[in-house]
Image (cartoon, rainbow, N blue to C red; front, side, top):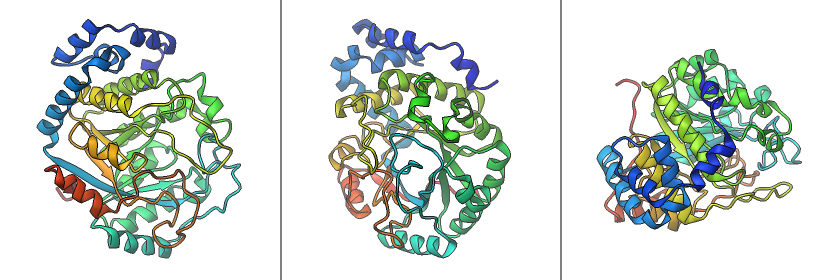
Length: 370
């Protein structure tokens, strides 16, 4: 059993049609539901829900405070390498992009850690790499995790999909969470965006959360890249995936992200779909109403104004002071960014904005000894 069994019974075209045909009464029924279904979720993200955004926002605020209190967890990304064998047409790390490829060694990682701790008392670090098993395979990742566990309470990673036994090995080394984004669940269009490299294998990537669940990961993160395909249909598949994983691997915690495409260095692929701030807010509200326990992250891809406005309305995790290039904090401050950040405030400035709204910043929320 894997999520492939769920996908086999889903139609992209039918899902799109159902969403577009939702009515005002469907939205009202979804808002009144004690345990919303996927059908209710489709109503909440549909155009018919636009007049109900204020009601959705208040409900989202209520469920978020009930489950998470008035807290926002901080994390910081640490890019280890931009080496990548994939040819994703929307990414600055594309193998065909003529850039300097950097792979941090242990001494350089140590310099990055020192620089991160100078900008804020972060305890949750997210390791990010391009997908290059030769340069950032399991031995490299294991050594990095063991090194960083000496400096951070929680180590997460966003790297190439791995085998179940590889995940078990990294969990034993101190890995806390893994984030793997499907980018798009449109299986027919997926190869267009991933013309070469291992990432081209849709089935292997979509089954990665199953391997993570079987390995016993503490937390996994899911997401789609907004800008490739119809966002409403894509996030419905994301909701189906989350629902399946919760039922199958119920011991694991879950997080979701909604990255909108940002400018990057390369051939200039332009988004096929534009998600407005208003629609992104609707999406966040819908997910919180659908799943009261899921964590939701807003990275520095989003503007300071939008992140401040969404603070109390469903989001639980923020990055701050982020660099999206390998060695960007100290070693190679002018290396290629994977994408351009949008919120350039310091962690202290973000913290002040959060506290001004009566919320508390959580720098650490997990310890493997408990």
